[in-house]
Image (tube, rainbow, N blue to C red):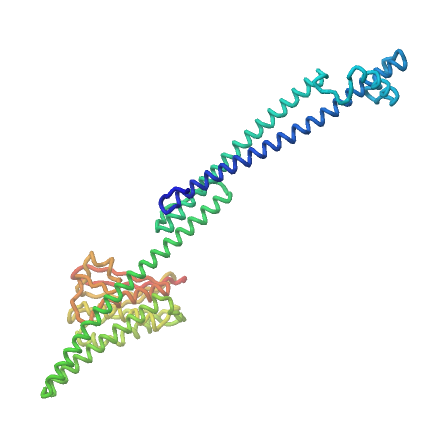
Length: 426
């Protein structure tokens, strides 16, 4: 009965290993036994033929002596080298058989041959046994090594199944296990990355839903209150009604703007946006980005300074304009009345650079690493009702999606500078 262990895996591996080890030993013993039996049978057959040839030669010598009464030396030599005559063999057989010297006699009655037979058989059996033992040790070492590799890989697979991707293998050489370890490492790494990505997406989705619900809560609550006020005060004068209507329109605009930006960000990060990059004037793109913000600039009496070179670069005018609008809008939101905004565009053989500077409140040092995160509102930001912390995240995704870079430099209470860079050789 199989012993119960952790999920049955460890004990099952041990049982399988021991069972296979016993089978291997049994099979090896059977092979060695069969080899020894076949080898000894072959030796017995060979020495039986040697014995018969030896006895036949003895027959021939005795027969020749009897037929000739005397033999010359060359006649004896011919018997051993060229074979004997049939008549001599028969006569010798007739004579020696009467003394029990026959072909089927026991080999032990031939001391010299029996000694050679035993010596040869002993040496061959000892050589075969020692060779098979050495071979067995070699095979056993490799067998145990293979089993240890399989155990290690099995442990790695079990860890991966349980969510632990830290184990990596490094088998030396270029064999099958080296390839297997390389493939396992790649599999574990890709699974780990995929699971981490899924976890990040889950966290992002959760945070996004929380932030969206939080951002929509304020305008929805305001609209509900305004609606209740209007329904419960039918005698309200026209001026108050217009004020409430203006606030409701402002709430609707905030909701519409938020939803539109979120949809754009979702499309970009979902990889469904295809940027239509064509050689266009970046100066015109900057001017297009400024157009919807001119009224806000006039309302705050801001000093706008433009230093724009002429330059053509392959980019998506619509999306790039969207990104620049969000950056400029962020500067407008965080600058006091009568402040200054400077937009500079320069290009050369290496890069195209757009700089957007302001002398506003600046950004705290601890907020800088998070300034491009979704819905992030740092301490340095002016608390505005219409600021939801999504514009800069959208801008960064758009710029980087076209192969560019978006950076920020800022000093608290002195202003900020956003830098958009596109490399010319891309």
